[in-house]
Amino acid sequence: DAGVIQSPRHEVTEMGQEVTLRCKLISGHNSLFWYRQTMMRGLELLIYFNNNVPIDDSGMPEDRFSAKMPNASFSTLKIQPSEPRDSAVYFCASSIGGEKLFFGSGTQLSVL
Amino acid sequence: GQNIDQPTEMTATEGAIVQINCTYQTSGFNGLFWYQQHAGEAPTFLSYNVLDGLEEKGRFSSFLSRSKGYSYLLLKELQMKDSASYLCAASNQAGTALIFGKGTTLSVSS
Image 1 (spheres, rainbow over the protein chains, first blue to last red):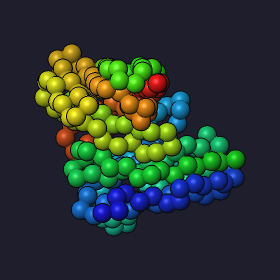
Image 2: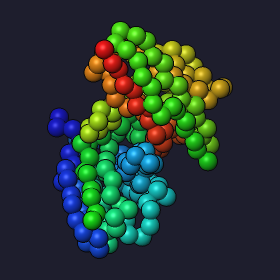
Image 3: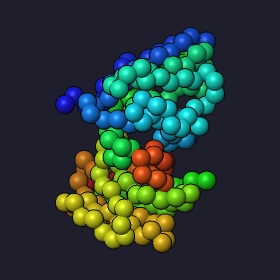
Image 4: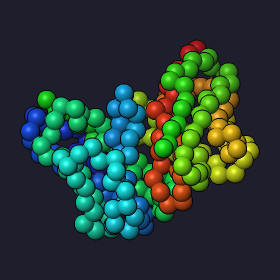
């Protein structure tokens, strides 16, 4: 199995631009998590889905952030418009039933 | 609310033993996880404790006391490759997301 696949690995954009991060789950996993990691705040949960349904989005910073899961194997996290304070590493993780998480390699986002 | 505390940094020498502590306060509790994260890489699973006691897995062991809201990760026979960040994480209910501590950066020197 290829594991959780995230794209792009690196994204550099200018303030105000739209950013879309992508994630492909491990086949057979039914839970999908988006985390953001910074030095100051560590690994923060943004949102998670069980069986394609968003369960908890209380960690999404504000309306500029949105996440979708159009099918059982794929998810997107969109930031529109992006701001410099959004600069971080964004991790996607999947699991079976929300227990042991398998992380993707992350997307390093830099908003200038 | 939920809060997970662990030391920010620790140092040790090759061949030594190090214990990384973690205390947690969660509205409910289902289990305690430890993850390892090398610089520039994704976190990878190390251990999972749901019952009180010690779980041993090779050079790494993890301990849990549910009544004290306390866990530790014990690393034996340290190697240079063990230099990494170690993340403590708790789930407050089965099937919900893990809440992570900020991680303990361990530096192993020769």
